[in-house]
Each structure stands twice: as C-alpha cells, then as structure tokens.
Length: 176
Picture: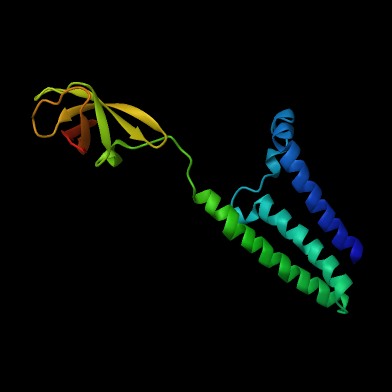
C-alpha cells in the first residue's frame, strides 16, 4: 500500500511542478497536441481538483500508514475521505471563485449612467460633443449631448444621466 500512496503523492507533486514551470512552454511547443485530453464540461473535473485530490490521497495514506495502527482498508477509506474533502475545498475555495471572476476591458454603454467624465469637445445646447469617461482601468471617449439642453464647455466635469441611441446624455457637475 505504501507504494500506491507514495506514487500518488510523488506523481501529484511532479505534475504540479511540471505544469507550473513548463506548462505554458509545453503547450506552445506541442501546439495543443494533447487538447483532446482536456476534461471540458463540469469544472469539478478540472486537473487542479483531480490531481490535488490524488496528491492528498497519497499524502494522507502515507501519514495514516506511518502514524496509526489501522488496517489497510481503514487507511484507504480515510485517505479517500480526506482526498475528497481536499478536492472539494480546492474546487469551492479556488476553482469556483476564479471561474466567476472576470478580468475584462469590455464595458456596456447602458451601464455608464451615473459615471463621471470630462468634456473633450464642447457640447452645444442642441448638438453633440465628446466626453472621456473612466471605465475600469482605462478611459473611453464617447459621443455626448446635453441632457438639459444647455451648452457645456470643454474641460467641464460631467455626469452621465442616461444613454439613448448610443449617445451619453450628460449634465455638468461641480465637485468642488
């Protein structure tokens, strides 16, 4: 049994080291030759959770075998339970939050209501100008019109009141 446990532990550690150190390089060098092996579908089948569970199974088995007087069946059962707990913890504490996080520079015009911006091109009372609005870590320039039908000078600070027909309707705001 010790050979099984050590094989799982060492195999998991080697997999982690190789994937961290050489993962991107191997993926590019082999040009996706092993993409058919990926487990698309349920995210709990991800290699991180599976290999993590196998590694913990091996480590728990070695520890239980050396430090308890339990029989082989009890050790394997306890090691499987511990591995299942560890794999579940990795899934819910690491994989699931990472899947739900978003790292994107995309934005929606409809979500710009209430945002502050600066007038780049003066906005006439009944016409269009241009404003710069900070979105995420960057800025975007958008066509703007006066919400109140008044002229807004260049360099003025504005707030987006509403968005209609891909145009930001803004009002001048004084934040001082």
